[in-house]
Image (cartoon, rainbow, N blue to C red; front, side):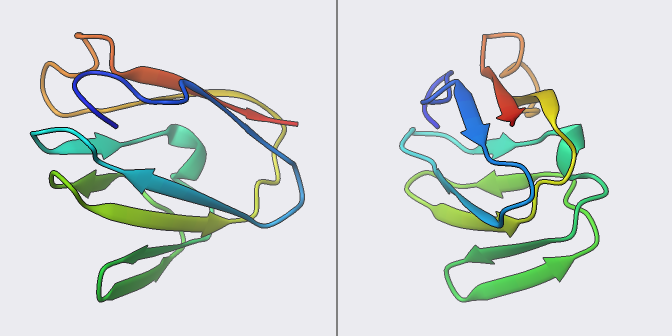
Length: 101
């Protein structure tokens, strides 16, 4: 994450195998990662000294320089958009695509 882009913009994940998605905010302002794909997916989020297991993740917000790891099992194949949903960031082009194969 940086102003106003995700790198890579397309994230390819294998279906039915546990994955770890590492999010790193390399920008100068806060950013967040949100995708409807994770709304009902059991996931573990690890950020600094915090570890959260949830039956769904709405978004992960990171301050500049912060990282977080999302661990989950992608079950549904397809293409799912993601974005930074802080006001104005999506509109500035901070979007991407999860491809679960």
